[in-house]
Length: 320
Image 1 (cartoon, rainbow, N blue to C red):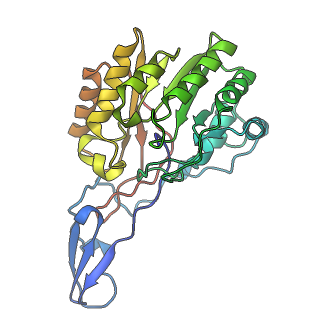
Image 2: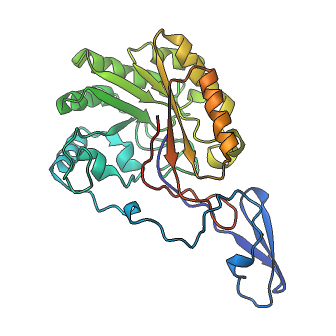
Image 3: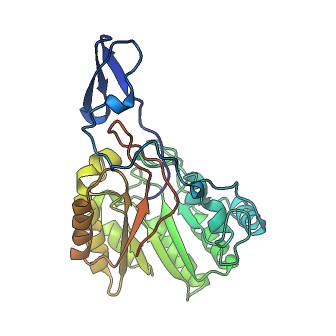
């Protein structure tokens, strides 16, 4: 799955005697503590060897991280419309705390926004075949088959909202021969047929590196091809499912750019996972080298004080 919220990592495991304890963290990381009691030693005595942002973990989080429960007329109307047509959104499935703000047209969760309501439609069902650590979408190796009526229903819903720009995303569907590329393409064609002037962005999986699937979607009438590299090269194996990869994602984006003249490509990375400034700059240069037009940066909370990554999302922070 391409975007979304936190799923906590496994808790650390303590072992050893009361005088010398070993904390076995993620990916074989080991931290050694000396203490004179059976209780775990105070965190302040730990020697952190994993990635660390430098932020004081005792500092209280800002008040704006808390969101009120979504409500309001626009929110209710959009939720009802999606339910009637049996459509999924990443907003709901990924448990996004900003759902009220977006669906109400900005301004806040309670309905006081006065802009255009926005939602990211998630096609190909609500169950992903991959298990990236940052994502809360449910997973299964054998999800239900795609709904054949979903492309038309999606187009009907979007057109009824009167929007001029729509984003389609999806779960990963490694169980399908083309990774779901044709389902995406059908949805784009249905949208363009019902409303020729609408602009469509697809935030896709890597289709397992299948470049024919990439070309098929790129030539379906799509305006923006988006695929997220998610994080810097060094953190790929920690953050993403092992079937994903930095170079594979770059190849997908590069091929999408060359598949159709004028195609706009877009990617995103999450910050606050332990990456260095230099690694972020290198990721930017790698994306620019293959012609990516737009980069968004998402901000996450600081890494866990003991060194392993805690992927709890904060408020939206996008930079173009």
